[in-house]
Every structure is written in C-alpha cells, then in structure tokens.
Image 1 (cartoon, helix red, strand yellow):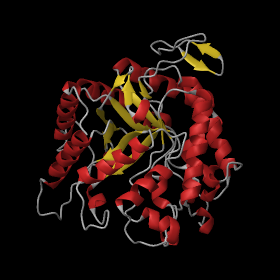
Image 2: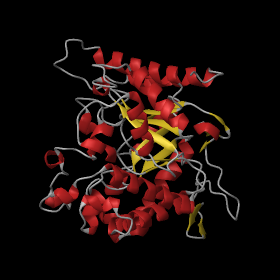
Image 3: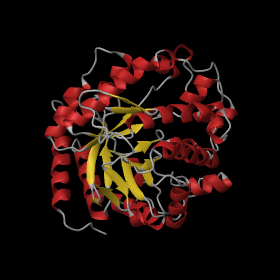
Image 4: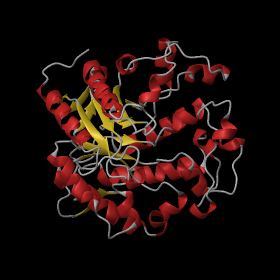
Length: 399
C-alpha cells in the first residue's frame, strides 16, 4: 500500500502500515548523532544510482533499474542515492502535466526497491537552478521563504513524502546536489548556471542567479521543515559537498585564504542547519588539496574533522559521494583503485556511518567513473561488498 494525503491505495508489494501507526523507518538519528538502523548503531556503504528513477520517469518502457537493484542486492550493497525528479525544467513535464502517471511510475520504483531490499535516499531537487527556472525566478529565490521556488519545493516534497512515509525502502530525504559549492564565489559570474533554452532554462543568467551561504542555508531549513510536516522520523540531509577549502573566508570576506580546521567545522555545521540532522559531504581526490593551511591533507584528516563537526552538532554524517575518475594522463593506471581503497579505509577508520560511491550504471560517464558489473570498474562493487562485510562484523565503531 501507499499513503497519499489520507487515502490508502493498494499496490502489490508496497509495505505501508495503515491507520495511525507511526512509520518505522530503517534509519533514524540517535543521541549524539549516531545513525541507527532498526534502533541499533549502523554503518554501511551504498552507491549512487543517479538515473535509476529518471530513466523510467522519462521513458515508461525503461525499467532497467530493476537489473541494477538485483545486482546490488546480490553484492549486499544496502542502499542507493538517486535523483528523484528532473534535472532540467523540461524533464519535469510529466510531473507537471500528468502527476498521476508520474506517481504511478514512482510507486513502481519504490515497490521494486522494497522487493529487492534496496534502501533509497531520494534527492528531491537535484540541480539548484531547475526549480527557479520552472517557476520563472532567479536562483537566489532559494533564499526567500516566500518565493515561488520554495512554494514549488514544499508542494513537491509534501506530495512525495506523504505518499511514501510508510515505505521501509526510504532511508533518508535529501534536498539536492552540492548547492553549497556555488555560494559566495568572488568569480560567480564565471560559474552561473548553464543556459539551454531548449531544455527550459531562461535565455540568460545574471547576478540574481548567484548564491550566498545564507541563501543555501535558508533552502536547507525550508526543505527540512517541509519534510518534517510529513515525516518526523527519518534523517534529513542537504546533499552538500565538502565546504571549499576557503568556504568560511569566502563567506565572510570573499577571500580564497584557506580555512583552519576550526573554521571548516563551523562552516560545515552552519551550512547544514537544523532541522537538517544528517550532515552531507562529498569527497574526491582533489578535495585533499589546500586543506587546513596545508598543501595536502589525508582523507582520514578530512573525515575526522567532518565527524568532529557532526558529533558536536548532534548530527549524523553522510559521505554522499566519493570516488576517483580514470585519468588517461596520469602515469599510474592503478591510481583510481588506490584512491578509492584509501577513501574506504578512511571511512572505516574514522567511524563514518554512511557513505555512497559515485556512480552505478551511468553510460554518459563510462570513460571516467561509471561502475557496472561488466566494465573495468566492476572491482569497485567487490570492494564495497568487502567493506560492508567488515562493517557488519565490527562490534565497535572506530573513533
């Protein structure tokens, strides 16, 4: 069954409790920011499956994600993070013009995840300019709680969450992807959102499309508040990347001077404001550069500071993306594997509770970072299985 605005609708395979019984989500955040699964401390590494739903959303004949679910379940990879909606304004056409069909497809997607035993972390508003473009506002509208952008977000979030609040497949709710990286840039004019009129964007961008820390924090608060109207239990996360090495200096002085570890922690907490209770970071090899006043930092150094920040705020930590691209110019062809192995080792050593590698079955990134059971990066699926086996055997969370 699914729960839709007070109406119970039967769908084979969807496990939804009826009546006034509260949902029993797989994940919650406990005291001190401990991530709990079924009430017990939990650590696990999943995978990004970015287009798992969007391919079906755009083409009703494409349910190829089911093969992915089966493969991931076989490998004991417990959950996926995915885009739950469109990337471009044009991609939201089905939802806007035929919401019944949109939710029929999303119902099937959630049902299939339940049946496969795959957890879901839906990222509901993936690309930060998209919803402002749909409603005819600049991207800065994310910072205005009275904007049409926030109203659209609230409506969509309310529909999705009230519909699936009782599904055991849903592990957490996420705002979008890396909004924070576009905040407070002195060279913002060089990094404004793309223009593709044929995909629904406006014909030009302006300074009104630039973001600040406060705008992003407002978007996070409004999103989490919208989630909490329908779901008072599951973790809520932002989808942010690591703060830039100079994020706090950029916030206050538009300076590229590197932040100290203390400034890093402050920025990370502030950009994931209450009622966000699962801090999000993404980590890649370039993130080690110019950290904490040093030329390079280790993955463990960075993640240890992330864990310190999350713990001090009483929140969980989610490394929502990690990975290493193949680089044909790099002298060491084994570099990507070595980097991912180092990331996994750091995740395990620092006690990170949740992480997800990038990315499963995304043909557009086949030459750089895509992972499938049959391509040259298939070994990464084995690394994840081995890591999850180790985490499941571990009796104590490392510190």
